[in-house]
Length: 110
Image (cartoon, rainbow, N blue to C red; front, top):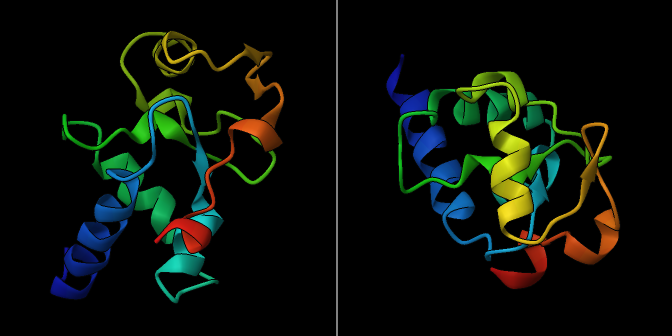
């Protein structure tokens, strides 16, 4: 991985570490707060690479519609959903219910 990707990934992880318990955000929201609005996919790559970083709550990052699009990167069939539900977030058919009420907008918080 080239140095610029490593730096971007670390910036992504710094934002993800600030997502409050019981909240989620999106790949695009993270990209926007980092000044790279068109880099949502790169944020996704960073989250894929974060699966072994215990201090990065990757389960709190979903797509812009509240879908658990990254769930296949977690060990076990439903680990991402289980982690979210343990924080009080309701998930049905890989979709976060009441998405707007649990959405954390990093641009407004950071």
